[in-house]
Image (cartoon, rainbow, N blue to C red; front, side, top):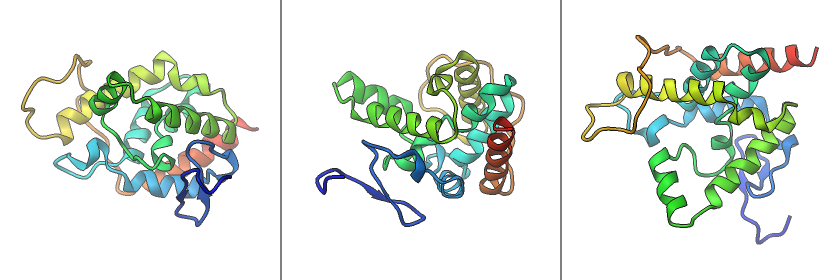
Length: 185
């Protein structure tokens, strides 16, 4: 890679280029640790709530076997983009102002994640995963966010409870390893 191309140093000491991601550099252990350290809502929740926990909860809602692994990994790009969890309103604002690079980088990393774990990257956009993600957003809003100063966009009715595991990093890794190995035989 060119020295002019921006890269990040990963937790496991590798050089990762978000604009040209190498699937072989995506490590399950690193992924689980980093997603467990990134807070949803850019850290503005009233209690700590990680992207790893969110991903586990989305995974638990998805029932189609070939979509479960992509559901778990639907936000994996946040571990390698250098941007973390960018709230959707900010993504929409950037896009409306013609700033497309964030979405492009996320899509490239999504492609590398799908290649690394051997599934079609189109699975990330399937309705079942999108609906589970939206349902978790509504549920997280209810259980981990403070009182809203203004109405959020239309959302589904939230679940009656929100799962919060003691160690989402370890659970994420266990699910990832189980799903990846069961998918491969």
